Amino acid sequence: MPNAETQGLQGYISELVAATRDGKIAWKAVNPTTFIWESGQPPARISLQRVERMAQVAVPATAVPGRPMQPPRVVQMPQASYIFQAWDMSSPNAAPVLNLDSPYGTELNQPLNELFDLVKSGVSQKTLDFLKSILPK
Amino acid sequence: MGAQPGDVQSALDRLSQIINTPFWWRGDFWIATVIGIVGALIAFGAWRQAGRAEAEAKKAKDEAEKAKDAATEAGKTVKLQTVCIDLTEIAQKIAVIELEITFEEAVYLLSDTSRHLYRVMASVPEEDFREAIASVKTALQNAQTSLKEVTPTGVESSPSAGLHSVYYNMVDKFAAINNCVSQLTGLMESKTYDYGRRDAER
Image 1 (spheres, helix red, strand yellow):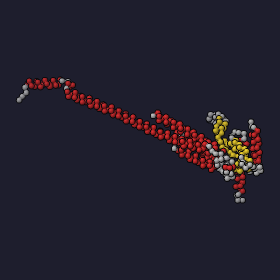
Image 2 (cartoon, each protein chain N blue to C red):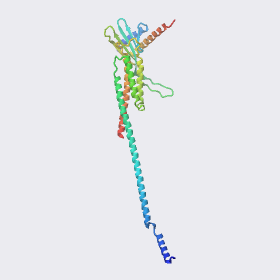
Image 3 (tube, each protein chain N blue to C red):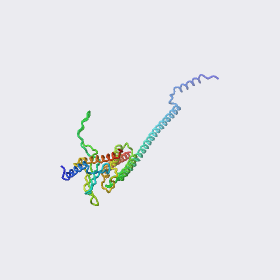
Image 4 (cartoon, each protein chain N blue to C red):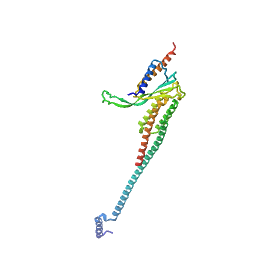
């Protein structure tokens, strides 16, 4: 059962997803797995990073023709975790006001996964648009 | 001058006496027999002596081979102990990564760790530690792949930015390398114990 803080963050991430989809947020790639958005007023910064970590994944029973039925089992597999951080840049020593580590299987992992994919494809599209714009007409 | 019939008879009697005397009554028979027996005894003694000498030589050869094997195993033990010390030093280096680690520092740390590990692993008999060595190599490759994922684009790479993206991406990978190195070290320590016990049994 998600608590109030998690529910609040889920709502905030949904708003971020919507604003990103509408092109209202200019995300920048710091590296291939980390994106930041720096808002003008009030000065703040949001970062989102995807990290591959080994996680225990439940595999359902599988049937392969000609072989005995594989029972349900738990295996170690690399899965995406997300680091979501927010800074209040108005103070001289800007410190993160939020530092959220969302491993695979937690409630915020899926919404952050959606946001990350959206941001990544948006940045890739922007790069592609630029590359197309410099082609001789 | 012709022989008298009495003389002939006497000679015949003597000859008959000689013929009828058993040969074991004759001294030359016993001399030859004694010489033969003594010769046979000497030959038998010499044969036994040679057999004993051969057994002693074989035993000495076995002992020498055992000593050689023991020396080889002792050499292996010392070598493994040295490798264990090297591996422990490498593991300590990557045990704690700074939160502020930069991409350049991570590249240096990983390449230095990788170089040291490959050098150390090349000096141990791979057949004894095949799986553990393969795990270390896989962990190193995973870390290399992860490092590429945080290659700065140039937008912002200053550590003062406080993103710590390199730390978050690499901390698990260095931990995985550390775990694999610790496992390899443990296996080598147990092998060292085995070699030592085998030496003691000899």
